[in-house]
Image 1 (cartoon, rainbow, N blue to C red):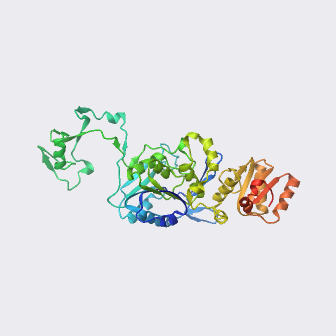
Image 2: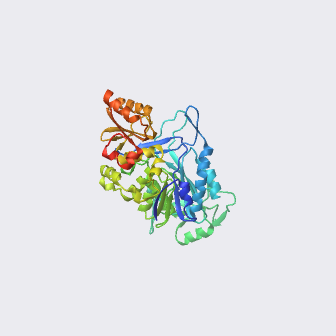
Length: 463
């Protein structure tokens, strides 16, 4: 199973069968009240998502509302619980903005505490904060659906300093002596005091276990102390603090806001699934979880509401060639037919017209073969076609919009521009001719219908 679904994830999740997924990882909006935007390379779309949950005041300022965020998350988390197999596991990636709220919610849905609360130290440095400590960690809440679940212990390699600890040797190899007396939290009330071969104490292992170890030659007795020969394992068992995985960089970056490193997903997928298992990412973004799942021979289901994200995921999994380099891949991406791999990708005029502003802009620039402009205020340049600035309006644009575009061209020191909108009033062609005659501005105006009909690619000009 290899599915990429372009849809609201709540709708997509409701379409999945009960008890059908082995592992689910999600990296949902963090309740930061930010809009994340970035452009990958020089020839791709704006990649953006909104992480705002609240209401705007009369001045346009957003006021965060945690309840709106939780009301949005809860039905999705309940659906994830439903589709998980009884042996399934769930990893929820979040940060300080909402991790406490999400943990309480998940505790209720899963009817248990998390198996682990993982702290990922994503960077060594942090943005200076005037009145507090810098934020350099994320939180990953790890739950299982039942007491029976897949978990494969993960290890880090020993450092040279750690290997020095194994300072003794016998016919089986190196070891160090680890005292078996209970200390600190291990010495809880109810742990029994027992005696073994004259050594009396509160031991971390049962007498039966100590006897078995002794038969195997793994016990050394000291003065009222029992020691176990601690031998090297595959490495150091990885704890819940992960400080050995860095942020995305280099060739791994696909320019997607908040992209997570493959090493992070590799650890999660290897720990909580087996080859052939189904891995679900209901907020798949640029598809890191899916790419790692595929490389590790797992099946996958990825869901994202953004057509831009889904096209990128399809290409990453089926068209991207790392050894070809960035320039080749950027050009190949523009020609890639994502519709062959993505379920629900908007294709009809009605679906395309219903896209959000930046998704509509991406569709227009992609259809024209243009390069994108910088993500930002609507008054800027939305793309460049053969060096000519483009501005896109997802509504019926009038005289004021045209005047604003002319102002942008003045700032860009350009006498030529392409003006695209869902439609124009009948007076726009006349105004464009006047601007060319009186001021020397050559404006080509295309409607959404012109783009659909292929007229724009022929450069036929005015509607």
